[in-house]
Image (cartoon, rainbow, N blue to C red; front, side, top):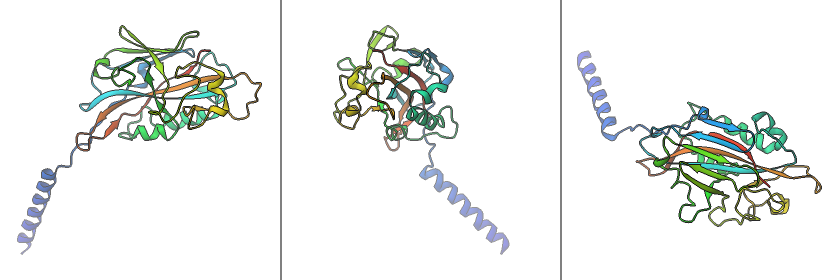
Length: 252
């Protein structure tokens, strides 16, 4: 009787194992991030992102960049993490939140689109016609190359990849808001005007508390990069953890 019982148990375990294999408990696709150590930041206006030559994952499609603009009354020549609180208290709050994901081995396959947009971040785009979806530029062809972000003074900030240079453009949320004075990453009174910082106009900007109308206003853009892929089972996007590109001072 005991032997028959043991045989029955073994048979049930075999059937259960076979069922799991047949139905398929599939491995969840995983997308590797760009290591934070691959990013070199210089002063307050330049960063170089060295993209690994190997694909971040078999389902990889492109890299995406999230950004948010912060108004400040302080000029920082070097925007390292220790000056974020002086720039804008919301900046340091956002950074501390995202920092829990950077280089994390446990916070994987998190929907970074939701994470960033819930903090007011938008997708970076490009000015050039037909390629203002930056995903086209940051697809598999970008692997093994370096992205150079240049916010030098007296220029419109640019992204250089290989021999090509593109002018960076602010988001308009797919037509949901209308950035003022324009979509360039350039400091301007209309950009930092608190009357324009709302969901209809400058939805990508956050004000700094307790600024008076006479305060000199600077603006900074924090940017993060993630790798994006497609889940072959659900056809939904999957994301790597983020890496901080830099906090750039917008030129006047």
